[in-house]
Image 1: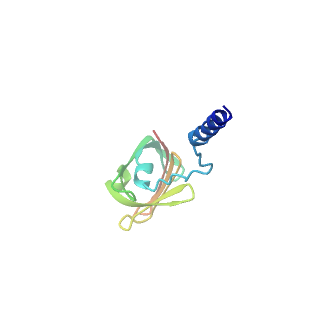
Image 2: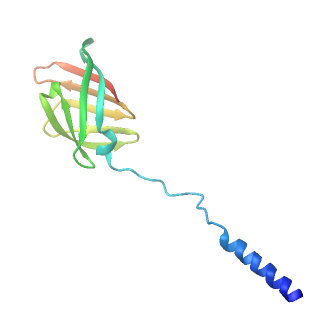
Amino acid sequence: MKRFVALFLALATAMTVLSCEVVNPDPEPVINDDYGTIVSGVYTGKLHYGTETIEDAYVVRISRVSKTVVTMTAEFLDGSANFNVTKTGETYTLSSETVYNINTTIAGKQIHISYLTTGGYMFTFSGAKD
C-alpha cells in the first residue's frame, strides 16, 4: 500500500510539473521596419503660404511602394513624387533626391511638410492621418 501511495504521489508530482507552461517574462519586442506601411494614408490639414492659410481642408496622400519608399501625392508637387522613408526615434522622415527644398516629418499620426518652391515661395502643411 505504501508503494501504491508513493507511486501515486510521484505520478501526481510529475504531471503537475509537466503541465506547467513555461512563460518567457521578457518576450522579444516586435520590430516593425515596414516604414512604408506605417506612414501610408490620407492626411488632411491646412496649407499655409507664409502665415496665411490658403487652403483649410488640404489633402496629402501617401502610398506605400516598398518598406522604405512611398509616393506622395499633393497639388503643390504638381502630382506625385517618390520619397525614401527613414526613422529616427519615433519620427519618420521623407526625403527625395529629385524633389528639392522639401522637408517632411511624420510623428504618430501628425505630418508636417515645408516646401520652398523654385520661385522662392514657402508653403507649409500640417495635418493628421485619418
